[in-house]
Amino acid sequence: MVKHRWWKESVVYQIYPRSFNDSNNDGIGDIPGIIEKLDYIKKLGIDVIWLCPIYESPNADNGYDISDYRAVMDEFGDLEDLEKLIAEIHKRDMKIIMDLVVNHTSDEHEWFIKSKKSKDNPYRDYYIWKEGKEDNQPPNNWGSFFGGSTWTYDEKTEEYYLHLFTEKQPDLNWENKEVRDNIYEMMRWWLDKGIDGFRMDVINMISKDQSFPDGKKGPNDDYGDGTPYFINGPRLYQYIKEMGENVLFDYDIMTVGETFNFGVENAKKFAKADGKDLLNMVFHFELMSVDRQDDNKWVKKEIDLTEIKDIYKKWNQELYEKGWNAIYLGNHDQPRIVSRFGDDEEYREESAKMLATMMMTMPGTPYIFQGEEIGMTNVAFDDIGKYRDVETINYMRIQTRKGRSKDKVMEDIHRVSRDNSRTPMQWNDNLNAGFTKSTPWINVNPNYKEINVKNALKDEDSIFYHYQEMIKLRKQNPALIYGRYLPILEEHKQIFAYRRIFEDDEFLVVLNFFGNDVEVSLPAEINLDNYQLVMKNYENKNKKQNSLTLKPYESLVFKLS
Ligand code: TEU
Ligand code: CA
Image: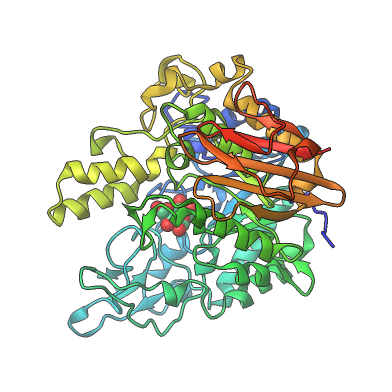
């Protein structure tokens, strides 16, 4: 039996506030700026908005370093603005989920400021402190996600603290009950303000193997890989279940865990505890690895479509009636989807529509990252000084120190830097794409004169309207939400095709994933005469023939009549 839930039937829109819309012209997107654009989001057909962190933060990692969980960053507005945003979203019959970043805080959070004061103060144990090894080397060899060791030495108390991300993001010690209770209380405080759920940042990293063994290290590696000791750690399930009992079970909310290397078994296990909803869905990263080698985001690999098919097949079939999935291709950490999985030049419109067609016909809740709906592309700034992302800047420093040429490193950055998705939203062809009237905190993508919301809304064939139509189609047809997923043409290197079946309804989706024509014969059991073409991304299509010729990135959705 398929259980109906509002969050399964929702389409989510992700807002990166800093880059969305600047209402007071200081160059930084803000909450009143979001309120101005809610009608636009509603027009697209969105049900839920995921708001990236808006909490007080010194912005070492753009808000993912929080110094006060119950205050709003000045640049974005204040608590009153946020309460207004929540009300305005609800008024439009949409919901809002907020980012929950509780693996770490900022080093400017009052807990950490107290924690580092002395070894014996009550906050010391809120974070993870360790003595150095002989010669005062770090406690182990783990490398942090953004370069360098995961350990930083504190001169005053002569110990190291752990940080999986930048040194300005010390990891909280979840072993400490008081820390957990504080977090649960904070979560309830937000839920009682009326928010509808959480996106949980790196939530499967909160439990660490506190014996801190060294990680495996290759001959060319500077640091060891600590992930086996802090991803899906020993007490993870216990903590999430406790979070359920203390918070989640009391509210009708949605939760999505950001879970690198989680696996489908964990997704099933964490979906429920004692029959109650826990992590409704997760962002697994498997699709994010299909174009990189050895999970190193900076090293390119050609995409093999069959790998993508295998990933969807596994997740869709394993979770069927047992769990639920989150469908995303991009976000604020990833390149733009049309540049990565499509063609951002000749076939930008066609390939962006093809990707939208895929997302909206998959089982799972789709997440659209701001700008995806108008086909925004990667950016290629010529100078590292124009980049803002701490990971990108560290990467340039570390790689050039190792002797690589700046130009080569820049090529990597153009392809995968997180700033690709963080350039301002392109609203129109005015100065700075209508994002701000002053200097934006990060430059606008120079292609804004052509690619912008104003143009998209004027053109009835635009990517925007294709998203809108696809969202509508999905909502009107439970088969596209709850239906079983049956892949066909599984070995095909270029065509991605599948059926969705629910009660008497059936859909057939055929997508050309590449930039050349391809002829394809459908399996004998499918007779196209029995199907009606309900969605396409090219003008003319002669539908009634069992062998189809698909144009570059052509996508077709058929419904069994
Ligand atoms: O990202 C977690 C995460 O896995 C990233 O480190 C990812 O590997 C990286 O961005 C790829 O380049 C979350 C947030 O989404 C990210 O923005 C934060 O920087 C990070 O957590 C720390 O809070
Ligand atoms: Ca502003």
